[in-house]
Amino acid sequence: MASSGSPFCPGFGSSVRVGGTALAALLALAIGFSLTPDRSSAQEVGNLMHFPQRPPPPKKPPLPSNAPMLVQATEIRYDYTNNSVAAVGNVQIYYGGATIEADEVIYDQKTKRLRAQGNVRLTEPDGKITYGQLIDLSDDYRDGFVDSLRLETPDDTRFAAARADRAKGNYTVLQNGVYTACEPCKDDPKKPPLWQVQAARIIHDECEKMLYFEYARIEFFGVPLAYVPFMSTPDPTVKRKSGFLFPSISETSQYGYGIAPKYFWALAPNYDLSFSTLLTTKQGALFQGEWRHRLLDGSYSIRAAGIFQQDPGYFASRDGPDSPTANTFRGAIQTAGQFALSDKWVWGWTGLLVTDTQFMYDYQLKQFASSFDPFQTGIASEAVSQLYLSGAGERS
Image (cartoon, rainbow, N blue to C red; front, side, top):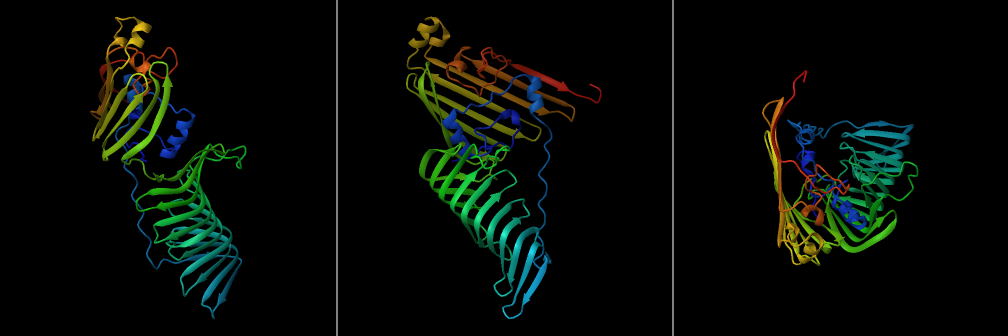
C-alpha cells in the first residue's frame, strides 16, 4: 500500500486521504467512498493555493548524554545493596525531554533500566503518549516492554495491545494489537470507532516508517469487514510514498460494474504521477492519469482520461445515433496552475477539454473540476477555461 498525501496546495487534492492512511481508503471503499471535486474558477484556485509556503521548523538539538534526571515523588528509597533507587507515590520523572508519571518507578543502576508500574504515563519529546500498567525500559528509552499498552500520537493515531516490545530503538511489536486513526466518540468514548484494525501482531518499523499486520481483521463500527493474513501500510508520519493504492469499486447502468486499480508514483519531493485503469464489464477499460508539479513560485497539474467504448450502441439508443456520446472514443483533459509574480500578484489558468459534455457524468469522474452541477452529483457538467491575473493590495 502507499500513501499519497501531497505537499502541494490543497487545490490539487491527492490520490487518497489518510485521515490518514491507506487503511482508511479500504474502509471507505466498503461504504462507497467518493472524492471531493476540485473547483475551476480563478477565485477558488487562488483561495486554495498559498504562496510562499512556510518551511518546517528546525529539529531540536539532542540533549547531551549527561543531562540530569529530575525526580519528584512522595518518597525516595535507596537500596545500596542492589544499587537501585525507587520513587514511590505520585512519581514524576523528567529526563531527555520525556516525562514519566506512575505510582512507583525503580531505577536499577547496574542494568540502567527503568521500571514504572501503576497508572504509568510516558510522554515522549515528539508528543507521543504511552499508557500502561507496567513499563520496563532502558534509560535511553530504546528497548523495553509495556503491559496493557495504549498509545496516542500527535496526529490522532491510536494503538492498543496486551503487550508491546521495543528493540534496537527501531522495532516495536504489539501482541494482540488494535490500530485506528479515528478519534473516540465524544458522547461515548467506549463506543467502537468508525474503523479499526485488530491483528495478532502489529510490527512498527520506525526506520522504514512502515506498519505490518499479521492475521488482521478490519472492523467498521465494531463489525468485522475483512480478514487478511498479512497486510502493510506506511505509518501515519508518511505523507507520500510510491506504491499501489486500494482499488475503488463502482457500478452504473452506463458501464456496469467497475474496479479501478491505482498506482501512485512519488518521483520527487516536488512532483508525482498517479494513474489508474477503470475495468468495466460493459464498456472496457478507462485509462486515467494525473501529473502534479510544484515549482519555487507556484504549481500546476495535468489530468487526463480516455476510453474506447466497447458498446457505444448503449449511448446511441439513449441519446440518439448522432450524439457524441455514441462515438467509440471519449475522453477529457484538464489542467490548472497558479504562479506568484510577487507577494501581491499571481497569474494562472484553468482549462478543460472534453469530447462531450456527458463523458464525466457517464463514467463518474468526480476528480475533474465542476463549476455547474445541477444534479448535485459532484460531477462536472460545465467548466470554465481561462487565463487570469489577480492582485491584492492593502486597500483592494
